[in-house]
Length: 538
Image (spheres, rainbow, N blue to C red):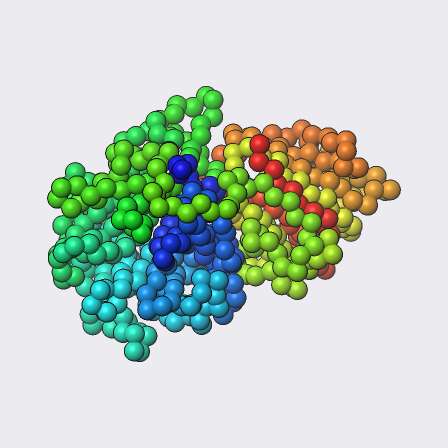
């Protein structure tokens, strides 16, 4: 078997991979999307199954009001003492001098839960991980944030001892063990033990095309005791612009039962418009940061090296002792909303789906109109990741608005400042109409305006479809589900990419989603009824 990278396509950033017996688990960041932390499992590293997210209650995670790309940053999954340990960060500020955040810890005997009530750890810095030393001691390892404008904000990697008796950190033990290289922006630390050494894996260069991972090691955990791997970095695509994979860096190391080693990393697959240079801009990552896995070997001096060079490869040999796992390699799906719970692929913004947002079952999804799609508070939307460059997504909606402040339809969404949708709304002169609108850097544009498509009075339900084709996407509608009409608007998919959002906003970490939404900012809570959702990769 071979691994085909990325192994987790679409927005699956900051992988924390571990092995428990013969099963591998990966935890990924979810940022402002609820539930928090995305989990997958596999026995062969090739085929991965999605598991229930651990942070599925507001007791464990309350992100109401969080900024775009705040929330869950770089969760750390580990296993020790017969249970899973999950450290996660809830970031409340993403731009400016400060990164207000809280790091939490929750545990579970079973990866599927239940997970314990969260324990507050600290707010020293993000990307915190828990290291279980062979001697029984435990340490929190984390990026350290410095708000002072005359210092670099990334102030090295801090290690603080964690007392399992009190389940608290001892701040008196805190010390900086590694300050990174001149590349700066050192973050995403994970500690491992092998032979006589502690190995520290850490990301640098920012999570963009200059991203990289370096390795340092020490025989102690003393302050400033770690030396960086010669011929660093360990993995990067900064100097491999022609590689299919880009941005590899932040990730985690794992060994197999048979003694092989692998490294799970974030990555991206940018594309270019036909009139652009491939090198500048290097491209637009509409699928966000995904997860790749590379094979690792240890050189004669006991330093880890990526097989095939530090740029990694698209095809990777699977572990020799891999156990074939039954899981899909592509992610087309159809939802009739006839199950008692929402499918695991669905996500909501900041808060869970509950009766205040709507209901589902018996073949219908009902969404109660809430705030606009530009809101950081109450948004009535369910969405799933774009997991392919080319796909169609389709739904049927019943909606009877009486105000232009009421809208319901099919949305392509990056964050509150970057999205578009096709929707039913109300026009004072035409009655019910179909409109297409886009929010680009917070600037809202209605594309049809006076030419909005009138819905005949005898039509109760409207079918909507979006056609995503790598560089661009469009919308269609139908009044009978058979004859489709294209809305004469072609949108630039780059606007829904990390790289585009980065140009004007500090939170650019999530990737594009497609979903269903209802808005009623009049406050009258007009209800939309969706009959099904179909997502088909091409």
